[in-house]
Image 1 (cartoon, one colour):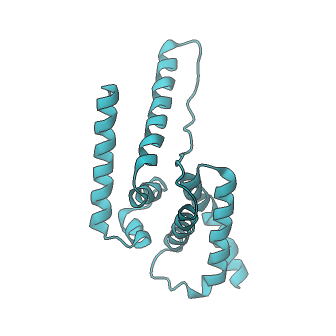
Image 2 (tube, rainbow, N blue to C red; image 1 turned 90 degrees about the vertical axis):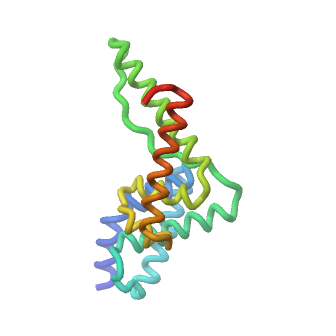
Image 3 (cartoon, rainbow, N blue to C red; image 1 turned 30 degrees about the horizontal axis):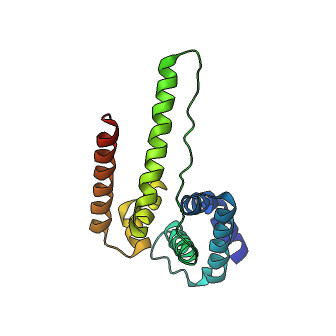
Length: 169
């Protein structure tokens, strides 16, 4: 029975956990290792899961702890997010400008996230995985209002810095 439950948990959550780990490490190999560690810990502790939160929240908390522990053991790394698929068309200069702007935004965002403190970086990573503020609060141990406030401030700062640097939205 435990194997069947675990198999479902793995199937439904592996890609989300892997993406979260990838944002921490920016490296597929390290992200795969971390995701594997997460699911080993989940397997070993599945009987301890109380059901107070969603299983995905529990897994994200394990993943966050695994990633942060690993990062503390080595020097800081720059976080990379998955590059967005931007269609390229050499025929239309407007498409080329859109692509250039899109790539500039991705690079800017990666740089900005890489400069955040570890707590804010964790919040952003979890937010990018489409966790709501309550889930992020459960995972990080911060209050829901604190999470919402931090997300709001981070968005505001990103927008302000982008506009100061490029003068455009």
